[in-house]
Amino acid sequence: MRQYGGALLDGWLEGGLAPASVGVIDPKPRADLAERGIAVNDGLPEDPAVMVIAVKPQMMAEVLPSLQARAGKDTLVLTVAAGTNIPTYEAAFPNSPVVRAMPNTPAAIRQGISAIVGNGKAGDAQMALAEMLMGVVGPVVRLEGESQMDAVTGLSGSGPGYVFYLIEAMTEAGVAEGLPREMAQKLATATVAGAGALAMASAEQPSVLRDRVTSPNGTTAAGLSQLMNPEDGLEPLMRRTVAAAAARVGNSGSERGARAARPADHLRRLFGGRYPRRPDRPCRTLSRGASSRDQALDRFRARDRREALFGADHASL
Image 1 (cartoon, rainbow, N blue to C red):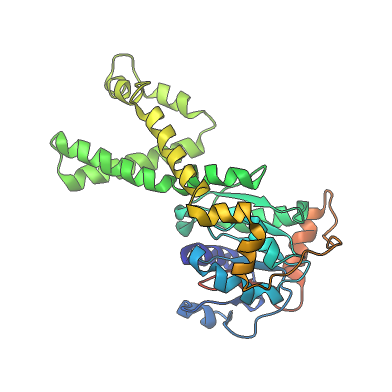
Image 2 (cartoon, rainbow, N blue to C red; image 1 turned 90 degrees about the vertical axis):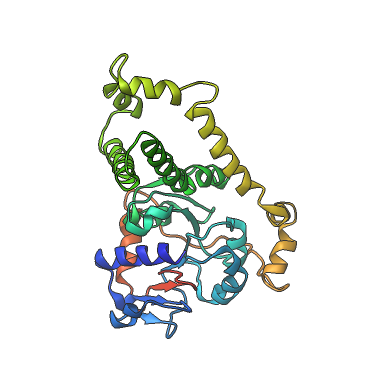
């Protein structure tokens, strides 16, 4: 999680966010943060414009109660933490709009992709602001509901691991054909990276790009005949792979099931028996419409006090 928070913060600062408007809570902060004028573990504001939580799942029970008092009804709570669902954040921040984001590891070098989904209080302005904030580490897609987050985790969240293993497998195949290991790995890594970059840059579908490099009865066609076997080729294997990862998220132990079946019990455990009740009236949000994004950005940039609060373990903004 720290790598996500750090990459996001660096992107925001390079994009013009004033260091004095940022506060960071981190038990092991980067040395350069204080040197750049960022408040670290001291003097953090209440009711910030944005609170970004980037912590490991096992730290959530400790972190959320410590941040409860800092979020106001206009504070956007943006979380990039895995394994904690929106109702848990709503219990901690009952008045605040909440947006959950799922980046993947290439976000650490700003080459990732993120999926976002908001709660009922996250309107057009808050979603636009969350999309802009996550956009500094790569493209952003919006989900229709949190139920899609397991599939996102199985596909793009875990996907870098699949690709790294693909590079390993291609390397071993090259070695088996007589190439030195170092050369085979260099060829495999550059091929995967280059093909991915080409797919990103092209307006064509991947299937069209594949057809263009596949001559009838040629070498690529011979290789693809193995990969495209409908019974034991890459597509059925990838379906099983993504399904297994998504199922692990959706059934990650009895704790997840307890949250869905007995949310009150889970929240009492999380907050030591003292979790806030939801308000009877809705909170005020920024007005919607064509100018909602501009209003959100203006509010994010222009408030006089410190705007940003970073949660523990490099929780961000």
